[in-house]
Length: 428
Image (cartoon, rainbow, N blue to C red):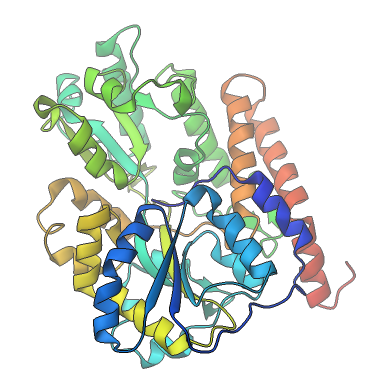
């Protein structure tokens, strides 16, 4: 899944890392060093023999990093000049590491490749790897958030198909809630998760940042509409005012009908199949996110493969990226991890081909949009959700909330505005 980490302290290290920090040390020869995170790191180790057979004399050394420590580890390695040759990073981190000068450009590699091409990848996902017109990463796997829902409870409430618009979704939630009665809800939108609100915001055309990514644009009509819709779900009592830590067991609560709609990602395809009882396996389904006018956009999440600057094994690093991006490898990777392939042709292969519950992801991945490509984005998104929580719990009005979001975003982007002004030759 797309990385969501508790790493305020790690992000704080950025203040101590200026753009003049030392570049990564070059390593001549030696093993090809690959850093990968979480379950992906375990699987990458299992794939190492395939790479070594295809590249006689080259040894692949895989280091697995926990997601909770990966961001800080990468920053520390950059500061110490000890980054690996190739690595996996969350695609929302790319802008940050490009700003540090830590990544190699990949445009010429892709232009000469017979394996990797922009046309093979979902367009919105490919765009997350392009910063200021240049390519710095290749999508490895993809992530987006959409609706998981109890189709049996929806049918009992008079809905035989998933809602496609915001108006239909509200009506369906009202019907489900009316039938569920007190002590149950229509949807679960945890107050400590920014992804559901961000997904709603991406249904609008207004950008989340403006002025070259230097200022917040939360007072725009589009975001105001998304935030207003989000707040209306809580105002009508259709979702509980709780965080995910207040849910004892998400899967048990979904199975017993405490809620019928959940905005979540592809990892839950496997989790729902493992954790829901057999009697409930036919009772749930997935659907693209509703928008004001029909099936909408989603977050362009996931992880990318990059070559770190200064590596002396760049040719071998690129061969590894190509091997991991082949359709067969992507299908095998999905079977081992549940991570959705970035290549569209991998969806024509088993086990994804014919999987009705995965089909909604393929549909929505054709419409995903990247988050703003600024290093500060995840900090801004966290502040966005903190302010949204204040609004839905009655401590802020809609007007006050969007103004506060802009204020916090502008504060976080102050250094960026200074750098942009300096680059333009203007007065900071």
